[in-house]
Length: 401
Image (cartoon, rainbow, N blue to C red):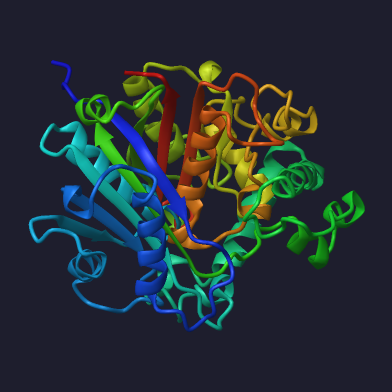
């Protein structure tokens, strides 16, 4: 029997500006994002009934973080604020929690918070088996950066590409970021295609994500009944799903567990496929209905693999899809129209999923000035946690009540 759920509407969203000093307390950026988000509505603090907060556990060490966040925001004592920490898709998991709270019919107004406090370390290089992760076999001795390179290299070897699809992806993202206020690369000179396509360490860095620094986001979700009560015109509804694959790298080869994952290795993203299948069913769409895609791309090839996992192009054909201009404005599926992780910026739980979701909302509202996808009605946002051991996919639909 089909489960009945209420529709969930995005009421408001906000992200903090860039430029917070390293020693800015997490409470400061959290309050800033929440105040900005609440100020866009007619709601009061006491109207918030439930919430979830995603945070970076390496730089925010406080215990009982959910209650601390609820207290510093002045939320009512009955409001449960559930903390989650799921690396770069933590914001998606927080949304997943609140979405279910409201879709179940128990609550009408929910708050999603994310926060990332930067430190003086290179967060990518610091995430290695003797740093952020104590289980040595987890990464088989590889840092995040090394793993990313190996995954991209395997994809290239398996499907016959050189670095040019990644260079093209990055070039398009950099172009979009220069049209997106708040992007890390906004206002900077465009990198040359020669720099982006260089087969060198410098070229690899040029095709990789940029750091954005300390960030917090806030999103308020409401039930369909509450949206009508508030007089929301042309609402944007959201649907969300997730799936995980084994975190151990060795399990990505010759895997004998879930049959859905058996045919794939690290050059494909079966967890995205599983999450996408479920959320497309709930939202009653197919990949052909997607007008704009916002995906997690710490490298160009990673973004390409995400498009394949979402079913927007066939597996192994993502590189050709990008080279044909299909991710640019006017293409088959404009992608990362804010610049993505490559050029908008990467800040783990504070940005990666929420920024993608927010750009999708702006596109559906017709407010993505200078980079607007004409007539956009359906957007998909995606992010992963710790090398696709967990993937979040959300569908946003315009006027779906």
